[in-house]
Image 1 (cartoon, rainbow, N blue to C red):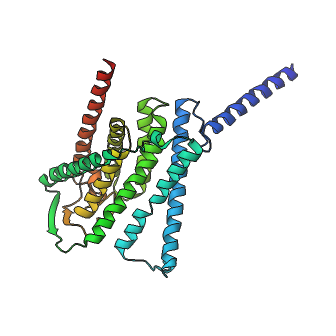
Image 2: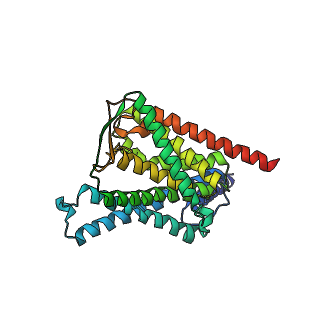
Image 3: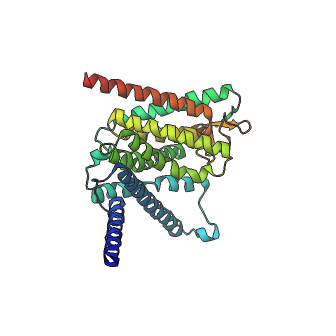
Length: 326
């Protein structure tokens, strides 16, 4: 009797161990398996994002430090370039995480770039860029009506070369974040799991890197900021579905960041706008209308504007699907 009980317990133990091993093997980001439950595949993509993001940022930081030392700057003693140059190094350094995501996709996932949303037709980038500019205009104008953001001055002697370099840097930075989130996670999941799961997982990886800058704000701004990040992540996903590539999301992301920081001089995701902004705007107090220290990305007005844009794109996609099925 005791032998039977012991045998049964051993069998159960082996089955449990086997399940754990199978689970760990499934979610490992170091293989290209997709034959698993949706929840496990989504978790695997989250881990793949974390791997590529952290590896990319680590290598990019090392590259920047190498440039500093190569130019005779000892960052350990606080020796740095000017704020503008350091910002440019940070922005262009994002080419490293972008490259890591592409290498991971090609080597580990063993998939074509087109499946990542990186198509040869980049016209969608310009569509996204125009949409980004329009959303900035509508959001800032609506907030200005409330009096919580106001015009301060116009910079007539802007350094055009620096502005153009900043534009290039934000193009790289926006593309890097989209390759990692919309490309690696959303496009990697959308044909394997339900659309809500793919969009949800994508919203998580898009929001997580921003939490460090959000943490410096009050609780109410953290909540409004997270809500806005989720909403704009959905917009990026809907645009990716609509244009069948990630280029529109890249264009919107980059132009939004560039206009907010370098054209209007407003805080971008908790970071202060550049001193060389074309138009100098400033917040009047801190409240949910202007997003406080985090900037208009934590504004309930901005969130509403982006939510409306997301709903429009989603409805367009829904109507297109109905027409195809008719």
